Image 1 (cartoon, rainbow, N blue to C red):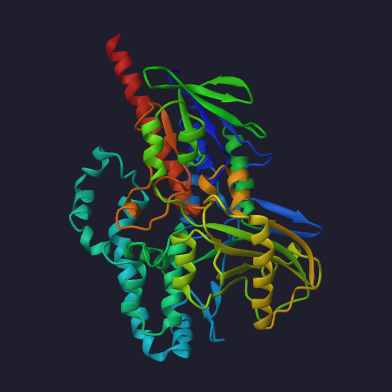
Image 2 (tube, helix red, strand yellow):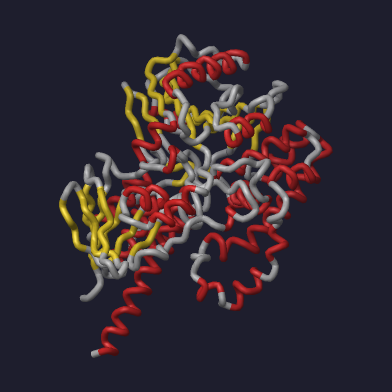
Length: 504
């Protein structure tokens, strides 16, 4: 059959999702991952009996995964067990107060009432407001490749486009959240959801308030055994469907004709012919390092602000800490200053917010008896000249341990094993743009709707999936990007074959 060879760059969730669908559509699919293991930022580490997920730690919109398994002819429940998390997260505020957030609405309202009774009604209004944004935007912004003009011309999408002012794009996340809640602790809690796509709540448009609805309205889940079990399951499905997966296989170049159509990829010095290329690597990095020419496009992409990066501490901690939940947030004392330092000054914040995920709370086998596995993530700036990450790593380690000690978690002498990742590591391991975790930030009223497209406008046959392109970062959105790219490839192949037959 004609036009059926696809080379997939990278083994992240977006690339895997696209590869499985393409194989199911009848394409011959080869996937190349530069690291020894597939998964991209969703990976796992074993250290002396402690097991850690290294990327995403919470699953939302599980129906996206179910649909992929269905399409491929598999039953998700045979491979993965989704466990509801309650509380979704335990919040520690600067004044010493603690709150458990839950997708159970009665529990959530009770928790808010204990913290700030006057804000219960505000929460109910906020959730309805966020649900309205979800209803207006989900189909067009989550499930449709919005850069495809012909798709947007469908009547149901036009109705949404004419009602864009209802999705609150002209205020910031913080401005809108502040209108629903009077207690600054609750404002800080709901502001944090802008970080789910690597953005600053004081700059990002209020449309991103769709994110807390996805979590509180639809629920948050954990995958039994760890989030990396999703990668294992997708690899099994991919191989069963005929996807050829090669690890330690670095793609060095996307090959193309002068007529601006891809011809394949160069992998470890060898040229692999392909009719289509599905690139799961960061799109900005791909245009800089994998594609010859197109200087104008590179300059254009350089003007896009990268998202947040992060610093991660994997700590195997001796002892049990019942005051901590599966997911925990220890907020900074001044959220606005934290983000100003990160985005305006590109410097490590003096007082970073601390995220702690402890999967051994749910999976006891993830740590030795009487111990816990702490995944600790801090918001960090993307890479710029002048940063000295080895020095910052040591300084921030002390800052975090001192802050935890003041909360009653004195673990400095209880850390049995440790591994640390900085933005430099994110750049090196995952070829992310300047070490960013979520691709491009949404720190303006326009960039939130201008994530890079799933179809290249410069090279025919080149498509993109992953967190750097539409619809964005996070497990479900990244997997949806793979679905969109695979669907566009299938449509292109069908049209090419149609015109080829017509010419004959």
